[in-house]
Structures are given as structure tokens and as C-alpha cells.
Image (tube, rainbow, N blue to C red; front, side, top):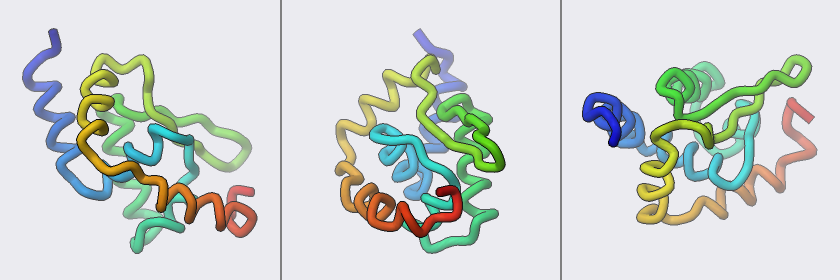
Length: 110
């Protein structure tokens, strides 16, 4: 059983369309900030801010590779099962993942 406060915080974070979409993408693949820039019409600092909030809540993890930081879902989070349940009720993000894949050779982290 999870703490109500912790679940409430996670639901608030995932109540944001951008963060929910990011989590949906991260369910299928890890991403660098520059890859998210291909999908979202926002600045790099805005994308990074969304990812920082998800990371601070323990929902995503980051891994530095050289000068780039890659984000993925935190499979060890006590909230991971909740995230999976929520994503069952959200359309998959295949169109956005395809945009990332199509731009893979043009992104800054490659």
C-alpha cells in the first residue's frame, strides 16, 4: 500500500498533458531532452523542467552518457505499477515515437 500523499503527488504530475505524454513515450523507449524537443513545441528549458519534476518524484531516472542525459521510466519506483495502470487508459504514443525515430539522425545527441 502506498502513501496517499505520494500517490496524490504522482497523479498531479501525470495530470499534466506534457508529462503524461512523456511518460507514455518513456514506457517504450528512453529519450534525451533533444529527442523530446522533436515532439513538443516548447523550449529546451521547459522540457527539462518537466523531466526534472518527474525525476524528483522518482517516476523517471536519468543516465549521463558523455554530455547527454537520457531519461527512462524508473522501473524500481513504488509507483511504477500505478503508472502502468494509468497508461493502459491513455492512447499509445506511437506517432510521437515515430517522429523521434524519423529525426534520430538530426538530433543533437546522436
